[in-house]
Image 1: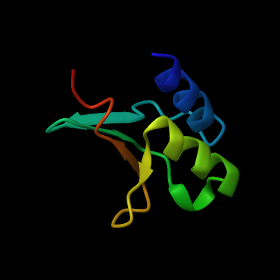
Image 2: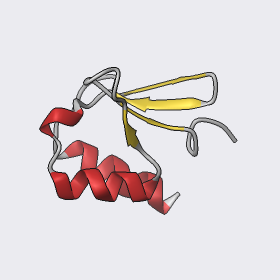
Image 3: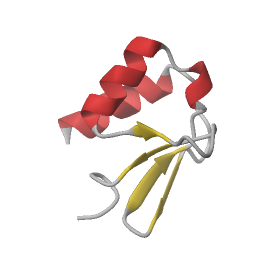
Length: 68
């Protein structure tokens, strides 16, 4: 749970949308554009289990947090 909270805290630096997450088919998405996230935060998010979606500049995804 600590890793999820740490990742969400990083995402919060880049905006506070009303509905920031989406889960479907064991994938959790956070709707933050990775082109505005700093290089250091990209590395940290990767270590926490969130990956920038190369097909969609509007989100990060995680299989780790997408299902139990």
